Image (tube, rainbow, N blue to C red):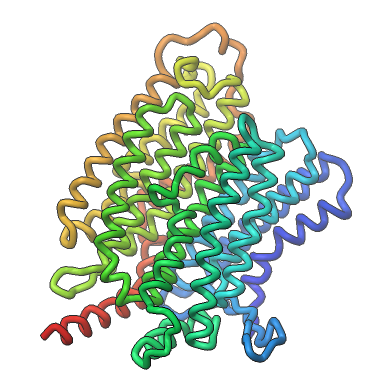
Length: 511
């Protein structure tokens, strides 16, 4: 069973990186090859999304090779596939990978190495979203650490070495928890196959064959995902990494790397441990509200544009947690709305935050500052950049007609019947979001124009390409969300059914 589509999507950036490292000569040619690879990867991700059949909830476009690692006792497979949960994230990775490469056109220092690491990062992230063998999933999860570390520490700014090391320590420690959880699952069930594990875990739990309690394995895994999402108080690596990372790395970090944590929570924590996720749902929702409010209040105090957007990402990722918490259900009835909203929030935030970091990167290149009090009146000097910045700001605060509104309203519709006061508290975060977004836009784009910015220019045609692609994505999902939300609903339906069965069993026992 080998379609080849997903293998091509995962390893095309790696092949491009190897060509750049060994064959391509000259910085100009390196940029052209990286750009061509990113466009081909975007085309592949679009084809994969189009080929995905919305009438079939099974994993599709499967690439599978038995005994990938030839140790009989381990049964490690090369196993790739997409369902409704992962297909939109494959598309998101292709979109932001292209945007990151084009945002890096102005890199002058060690150009060859830079694009090698950037393309390897895309391979790692794509591999996480399509892996269906847990060990293979972990390999791609870890592969992402090296490119990120070098991209921040070599091409970053400010305290780049400190920020890179902090990122590495936090995420590596989170991965250590995950590895222990994976091994506990393997020695309890005898498989790494993520399609078999939900049934195998349930059977092992009933038979008392789990070597450690399911709740403990769940905790080990969700800690790793919480670090990546990130969840308060494990979030402190994110603002530093964003502030000191190059623009393209911030785009990938906010756009897809954080989504690895949310994807793991939905696919693995909720999908493989339905009984435990119901018990933990309130705590997850509570941490979600803390994320939303803490991130929003701290964002109000930021004066650096990148740090402001970084803390706003902490806030917006709280909505993913709130959507996941809605699986507890009312009177034992589970609705897919909140979980679909959590998944859609990952996609919409990826495009919105990615676009925000692109625009801020362009503003910094032209104005040479990200310090908000030093900015002002930029709308008259760079109208295209200002218009895109205004649009992405309004999308971030959830303006109807943009993708940000659709995902947040689904989260609220799913969560309010379950935890009304938690959802109400989180809704207050939107008010704060509107405050800091409008304050940021007013201080940077409007007001009297400053003489120091008289000579700055607007975006070039090349710089407009990734901006316009992401603008189209934000508006398209805002106007017609079904083309993405239908896929996510299809992907979470089997998880919802498993949770419903767990709820029913719990109610039966209580009776």
